[in-house]
Length: 355
Image 1 (cartoon, helix red, strand yellow):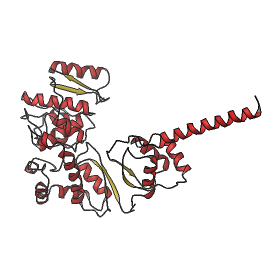
Image 2 (cartoon, rainbow, N blue to C red):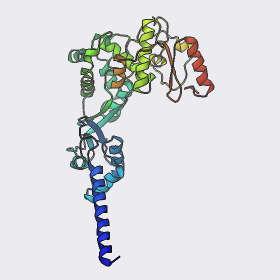
Image 3 (cartoon, helix red, strand yellow):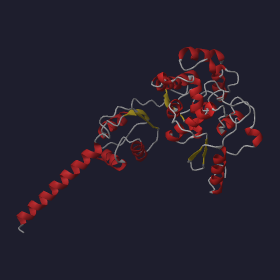
Image 4 (cartoon, helix red, strand yellow):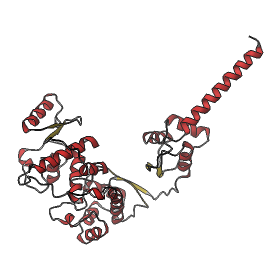
């Protein structure tokens, strides 16, 4: 082969490599889903490394590859991404995302971010507020029980009714505060603004479900959803458990939900309870006496929107019992005998939750 032919082959090879690299570049920088319109919130705290930011974006499915994201930053001589809370979409290209993160979304060092997790209760939320703002835990609890303030909220939000004023309810706003990560202007933020920001989010979520509320009140659906949040591990088994709860109510049975006993006693779900504790008479305790065919007096945690959806649209079934093992697997049975047998099987395998 002549030198000229070798040169031609070499140049052709370089051309193919260039085209291949260009195609790879185009693929990795293109939007994940051009048709997507869903907002995805990400929080970049002060001091977060580029490496962790890239992993965060990958976990949120906003970029295709976290390593290539870091390469992209190097190629474009971008050395600083600013801390803030951003609303991004899968329809954004990598370049668009980087431009937003580089601009800092008008970053203000006084701005605070507070994360309220799904399944946590009102006291957990109060602790988060106290930890991140100028307010004390006691102040948060006090406002959450203030009847004048609660009546103002009832006038403002359609899903809040006088049901929350029942004197047997521990924390009237329990179940209504939407879990999420929220951004506030500073630590000086008023507690009422925090509550109402979460209630605004809950109202936004509930607008799509409002017409589906039929058999029960919003308060009762929130109550059921709060139980599903703690009893189930995903949308599928929560919908199944919801169906079982409705079957038990229809058969005038008690709901027999252990998580309601823990809430009734205000003890953490970290150890087994005694028979006497399970038999405690309390309007929250669905394992106790005089609770046949009844719901707890109110929610026992702040549920996710998926648990609320499960409470409204359950999976119809003919089961009456369920039990979960320590691995999060849920088993369904039709009779008490089958239920007890399944419990023993779980214990024999060493998968009982309290072992």
